[in-house]
Image 1 (tube, rainbow, N blue to C red):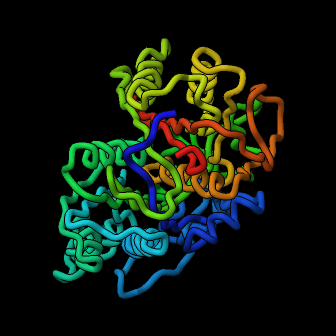
Image 2 (cartoon, one colour; image 1 turned 60 degrees about the vertical axis):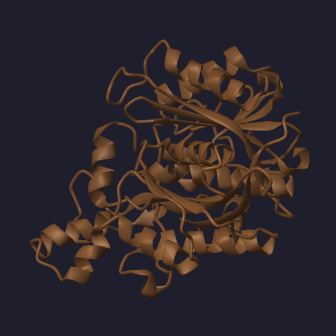
Length: 395
């Protein structure tokens, strides 16, 4: 088995289940979805998005000194927890700690109020809060990190993309360590409305009824929010404990349509093939496909086709979207975090199966078998990304 040069040494999370990794693990272990009815503000409610609407929004919390919004507070809190977690397990930062921040949309609520409530006339301090560099700069200052920082935007593949870039930075000796943080708090009434219009989001029905990845009768996804951070360490830097080894990954683009997947799946298939080559492993080494699995017909069909074509009958598929919601730019990282915690516990908690589905679909509580995890993500506009992950028992 390939020995990974790059490892995830610490995890931090803020999700619809609450603030902290423990809240995330207890939430998914309960088998209940993080989604709940959310009532829109009177000035933002629309006729097309009924109130209340189902979504997995981050609850109020965090440190007010971290900023005026949950976006900034969530970003800083998740990084703070990941760094503390890594330190607890023996990690010590090198001289060059970089930071990759993955996001699709930034301060959605703050930008809305900037235009609708303040007509663009705010204090300098408030204006700086709108800048994506501000929470990143605050994070680097707090921890004394001096490596490079960069924003990563690849729609719903952003978390995978950031992890792939982190591995490239580490393998090329560009940095000693990388903090990867993905943040998405975009469950605003406007966003819910437009994803409904696209025919992919469901807001008027409970998650397990509406979002049934790889099962009959699925209508799409319920939306979620999250900020998830990883401390990623490189060659020669071996903490006492790590969650996953990052073997490799790949990215492709369909170059086909702004929303639809290319029907022949050529780019999706190439992404999986290149990820396996980059990781130095075979398809039959993969035991679990941690799928994008949003519950939409085209995405679920694409991943099920790849599973049937490329992987052996011993490879199982699952989706965490019914539990976490679809966290957009933070979705891949949130789902990797759950998989990493599950690998540490040797138990994977999943949503119940509620309808006939794929014969290799996992549901409920599953005791993990040895093997690699392939994390796939398919982003709107043709983005594809796959990462190969090795559990700590095989490192």
